[in-house]
Image 1 (cartoon, rainbow, N blue to C red):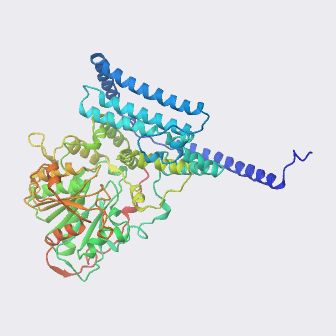
Image 2: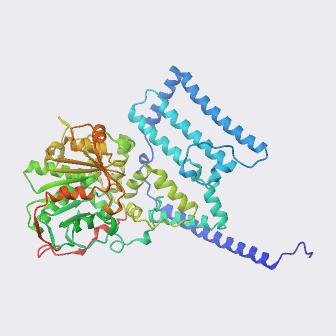
Image 3: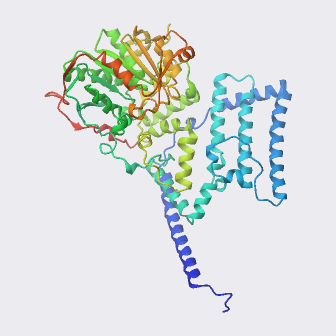
Length: 608
C-alpha cells in the first residue's frame, strides 16, 4: 500500500463513526416507518366535504372566467402576457448571472416575507429563482380571482380563501429540497434533524389518531394546577354539563354581588388563568370580588343530543342558581367570552321573557350576536361545508376537536400550520414551552345538536336578531330576540380579532334592548386583546359613549387610552357590585368542595 492510498487513523475513525451514526439513523427510520404505518391505520378521516368546497364553486368560477374571456379577451390576455413576461424576464436574469460565471442571484427587490428570512433566498441563484417564481405565481393566482367578473361576492370570498390556501401550501419553504434552513440543519447534524423530525411527525400522528395536527407547544413543560391554572379555588358544584369553581379570596372583604364567568366551551377556561402575572381570574379575585368560573365538560358521543337548551338550562341558569344559593344574594354579575357571550345573550333574553332578574349586569368578551356579516368564516358557513359538518356529527355524535382546531388554524395557516410543521418535521426542533400555545392545543369536542343549532340557527339564519316570521331564536319553549336583552351591558372587543370582528360585535350591541351600554375596543386580537394585564402596559384601548354612530365613525371619534382595559372595566363593575362584606370562602354546608381548582373536567380528553 502506498502512502497516497493510506488513511490516517483519525480519518478512519471519523469515517467509521459517520457510518455507525448513519446505520443507527437508518435503523431508527425503519422503526419510525413501522410506527407511521400503524398510526395512519387508526385514522378516522373527517368528512371529505370539510377539506374543500363543493365542485360547483369552481364550476361557477370557471364559467365566469370563460364569460369574461368571451366578452373581454383583451383584459385576460393582458394579465396572461404580464405574467408570461415577468416569468421569462426572471428566467433570463437568472441565466445571465450564470453565463457571467458568477454564482450569485440578480438584484432582488421582491416583497418582504418573513418565511424567506434566510439570506440565501436573496444571494443564492437557485433559492432566489425558486422564491421569485413562487411570488410571481402567487400574484397571478390572486389577480385571476380578483379579475373574474360576474362572480357573487360570497363566491369571491371563498375563492380568495381557497386560492390563498393553495398559495400558502405550495410555498417553497414547505419542501425540503427548496428550504435552505432545513437543508443546512440536515447537513450540520448529519441527518439527525430529519430523523428527529420524523419522530415528531409520528408522535403527532399517534397522539391524534392518525390526523396530522402539529403540536404547537411542549406539552411536557406544563401541568394544570402546577404551572398553569394555578389560582387557588375549589369546585363547589358539578353536573353533567359543567363544574363550578369558586375561587379563594385574597382580600379581607369582597363586594356583595358575586361575579360568574362563562368561558367558551370550544376551548378551556384556563386561558384566563395561564400564569399569575397575566391571569384575569387572579386579577378579579385580587380586586375584591367573589368569583365563580364555569369549567365545561369535554363531551363524548353520549352528548350527541345536547343542544343550546341544555347549555343554557343546565349550564348558565343552573350556575346562576347555585351562586345565589352559596352567597345568599338575589343577583349576580355575569361575564360571557366568545360563544359563551353569545349564549349569555340568549340566556338574558330568556330570563327577560320569564321575568327573572337574577343577573344585575353582563359583560361580553368578543361576543357575536349579529351574524349578518360572516367575515373570515364565509368559506365555512356555506351549505356544502355545513352539510359536511352535519354528516360528521351524525356519524360521531360530536364535532371532533381536531376539526375545529384545523379550521381555526387554516385561518392563519402560515403561523399555525406550516411554520410549526417546518420547525418540527423538517428541522427536528422540540416545540416551544409556550403556555398560550399549550392552551390552544387543548381543544374540545362539540355536541352534535349544539353544533347544528349554532351553525344553522345563529350563523346562517341569524335568527336572534331577525324580525318577522323567521326572526327570534327558539330556546326552552320561548322565542328570544336580541331586543329582549335589557340589563346593563359592557362589551369588550378586539381591534384585529379575526374570529369575532369588532365591527360585527358592535352592530350586535347596538341592537340590544338595554338602555345602559358601554363599548370598549382593545388593541390586538381575540386572545391577546382580552388577556392584557395592566402590568405589561402593552395594548391600549378605545372608548366612545355614542353608540348611535356607525362603526367607522365610532372608531374615528373614539378616545384612545394607554394600557389595559381591565381597570376601566373593574371600575364599571364595581359600581354594580354593591357594598363590601366579609370575604367568602369556597362552598358552604350544602355545597361542599369537591376538588381543588382547576377541577376534573378541564383534564378530560374523550377518546373520539
